[in-house]
Image 1 (cartoon, helix red, strand yellow):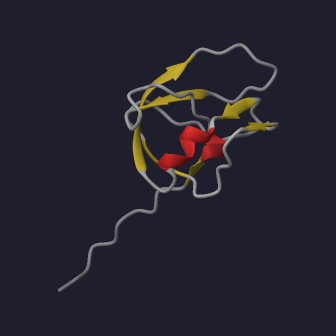
Image 2 (image 1 turned 120 degrees about the vertical axis):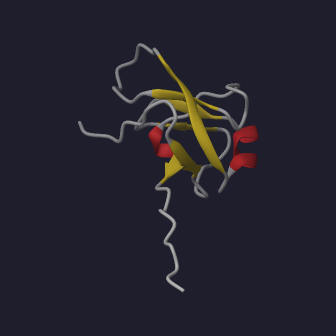
Length: 87
């Protein structure tokens, strides 16, 4: 099974599609309704949790919530690189 792996210091965007009070079957991670307040916001990965589970997806702690919630790759959307305008 292949899934995105992020590292400490990586920037991510919290997906606009996360649903509160939902248990994601792909990662076996619960999305609390309070986490939806961060939809669309950019966050930095501060730590990677060691988590024993049948699913191999990593769990991440973010700066945006002071490491309060555990996040997984399914809760992120790609961060679009900024393009420099030529003047």
